[in-house]
Length: 214
Image (cartoon, helix red, strand yellow):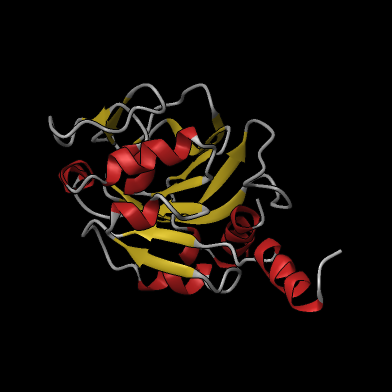
């Protein structure tokens, strides 16, 4: 039988706040991402420290810009720390450039390679369509998805990108613009969104809430 103080300590350990680490590798403004995630998880921190990543309960890898920016993930030791957390079944969400990094690589840059959790190379939109792809577009749900729970098929999300991920095993939803491409990938506890949920209104908020509630 625990004493009163010991019982409180024991309960506190079990009720420890979930920590979401937003990975900072110098690719884009993280303010809106962090603000959105803090609506559902107060302990959302920004970090470029592999040791902090190794202790986080959930990981978010956002990013905008050129694929070469992801080289910082490897050189800083972050990629290895992220791999280890994924092996421990830690939920991870890649956003925009962060989704593309989950693949083998991108034609935008010969180096670095992606982390390779999904096969295939990200490619540029064809010349027949305006690039970058900027604005609202529908997402077509193709498979059951925990990330898209409670979100209607063909909901609109906000995109801004010049390269897109291929269709692949693990594609939960696609977008149709210059051909079909992966809008959501999901395998185990690894997720990716090509669009920006933090800029996508109510549907985007629902997606963030779903990830925080995993």
